[in-house]
Image (cartoon, helix red, strand yellow):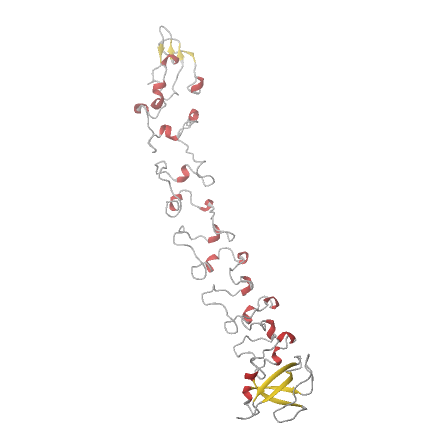
Length: 368
């Protein structure tokens, strides 16, 4: 077995490293260059905190300075304190000649190693994106140098940082203020971005006619552009809210009673008679339409559509004098069914000359 030499070396790896004391035991025979690390052995110099170094060299020389091949396996257990290494000088050693350097699949860059890596753990690497010029993301993020735009990305030519941030890739934010009005479906087509759902109201108008980019819901719709009588084409209970089950049964169009400004509280219907509602201002629909249909419930059907149809039981003939000469004669309900017929008091029963004129309109019942 060849003799082993023991040597304490004051080693200087490069001008960037401070000297350190290295105690090695190695055989005095040549080693392969790829397994070796060339170190400069400086004899007769003191290492910090040491009295001196051993003088025994493989060839017996006890002094002088020379290069010696030391297998890198002997260095593994010694470790290296990178704290003394000057910033941005990593590649003085990490150059694939002295020791492992940048791999061939590394991002193309001339930045120093320690701009992304640390000596505590080589990976994961971190990169300070605030030194990157806006709009230049694809210089690295091109799918080759670094991860690029994925295949299912929205089709766009705008730069990455218009939507994404380096602090967190998601969630994505997009400034819709730059989008041309009426072009929502260029992206929102179900392929690039969510589109109109299957249960959406059938329409060909653009999304931004109802929706806002600040909040998709609630949606607002300008009914002024809708056809007056076409409410039910959307409000059918499927596409949009329709007539509730307890709604007044009618075939009339919605806008006969409702308006788009205030759907519920402003419901109203104008009857064909100019005298209605008249004194019926406090009468509800259900007072007459007892079956919740357009058909009114006349108390005395033979008098409809006159007032007597509902009010014949309220008729009081003593207040409807027709004449008092030669005897008192009262108007009958049949003569005043519409409350608008002549109600004058005549001089006598010839009913030719009027003694007192009366109007045909009643006062409110509270004033009768």
